[in-house]
Amino acid sequence: MQHANEQHQQPEASEPVKSKPQSASVGQRWITALIAMPIVLTFVWLGGWAAFAATLLVVVLGTLELHQMMLHAGYHPLIWITFGLSTLFLIAAMLPQQRLLILETGLGGALLVSFPWLFFRKKLDGAMVDWALTLAISIYLGWPMSFFLLLRGYQPALLHPTSASWLFLPRGAWWLLMVFLGVWGFDAAAFFAGRYLGKHKLAPAISPAKTWEGVLGGFVLSITAALLLTVVPLEVPWYLAVVLGLLLGVAAVLGDLAESLIKRQTHVKDSGQIMPGHGGMLDRVDSLLFAVIVVYVFSQVIGK
Image (cartoon, rainbow, N blue to C red; front, top):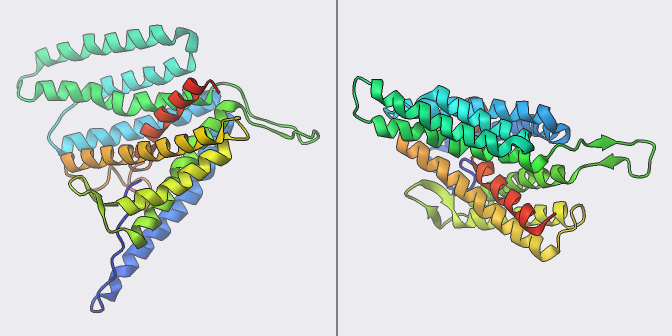
């Protein structure tokens, strides 16, 4: 949700050209979103190992971006251990019967391999920070991404053109749509509310462009998405759907601020340039990382 709720500033008369780059950036955001959204929704529909492949690609690209950010700040985490642990998180989500064993083996193996790596460093300055980052990147990115697979489940979506109920979406697909459409709606509403109405800074020390007005505007669409995607399809009471919409919005903001803090600490503007108008892959999934955990826990608690 990078720059999702920027405070609107009127351009000065002597510098009218300032609005052009901003308008171009907004246009790039929309074009990229219109291309990416159908691709994401296709993998939500497919689920299974197709969704695993898509999730793994996001983890790989996000890990590479985080690694480059750490190098830019002078840190040197061991990227192949990060990749390995994150991949095990995803595999564990696909194999529920062996999930606990895979997680135990992955975490234990990461500890046994990563810590002795410090013994062979010529310079021990910063060794503990690099070791901590090696594991922390997996927990920050790989672990939340595994919740997309857990939430989606393994039941396929089906089309029955000749029957009255021509479309069948499993419950996991509805929950996952709640995550994506809820966060996307929150981002869009927060962007425009913050741009045109934003006056009060949300977290100026971390992300000066974000405003409370943007957050409140985002809540409108996150609650709306929760009502539309859970009350009828998943039989969630409307008042719990409202609570879910609020929790989703809070999680989206916290996820966005978390990535903003990482970028501020590593002195970079964007995590990458893979998505025009949006920045890197991490810039697009930051809000989702916290939101998917909230929705998964919510779905387990209410038993839907």
